[in-house]
Image (tube, rainbow, N blue to C red; front, side):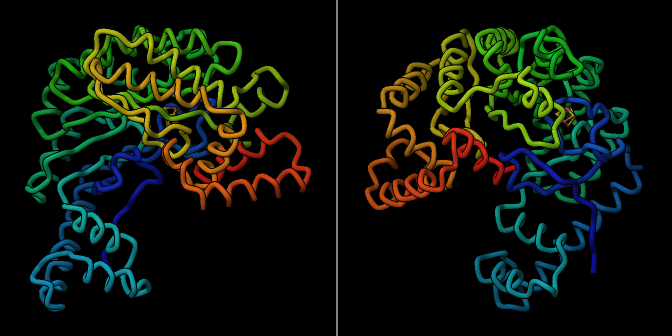
Length: 381
Ligand code: SF4
């Protein structure tokens, strides 16, 4: 059985991508809101190792095509074939199932793991990208995570070389553009470096997706976090801005600060207000703003700047204008995975189920309902 190595995470928008692990873990590994690679050491895999994984993925893809012909699916990876593969769970390994799903969804995107593979020497990463494109000529989009600090240290020429070799998008966790907060959460980067790195990526022709973390400043810095982050993004004008709301797990360094009361977290309604303030300060950009992370309360805050800005603010106003009861119902329904959009509140059957759940929570005397809602978010990370 062929198996190749895959890392633990990818951005939500890369759900349909082939995952190729070029490095392991994170070279920084100190951000206080991040638990993903805690205790793990950063490691750059050798080019031979990475290429061997790409080759294994190619061999698996070839075998799946043959299986498709044998099963009368005409070489396609269709519903029937995918069912056959996933029904025989024990027979096919994880890599096999990953490649099958990838082909099922088109087989045209790849994501280079882990947290900061741009840390690799540029010529090495170019070699990996070139090999990946050679083995899978149908891939039209290759993306990776990268830190602003690392990108700021690359030259424009290097980034252009990576783009030419096939790197089409970089996902950067900006989190915030407010310097005191960047320091507080130990992001290891400044707002200036975010801007320098972001501008350089955009100039190189690589598409840039910048992640913002609503709630990160807590009650103390909510205003500064919103306004300064918008200011940084206005200078970068990235192709995409993505929201990913803060959730503090007990194994994160930030948890200690929350426990001692040093950091006061925002509740869901306050986070929505903060996002509204953030959006209202985004000006002069042509970015697409998405809220596609399951931790976000309002998934429908999504649209193209500048034309959709008022529509996005109207969604915030619509939520804020709901009665206290309706907001509670929406929050619990969303965290229970029953609601996605505000219009879902009109669904009487689901509403009844959510109302019953809230009654149960109250009877159980679970204390602060906002805390209960927060703990429901733990299911998603
Ligand atoms: S740079 Fe990214 S992966 Fe590394 S610690 Fe910070 S948030 Fe986590």
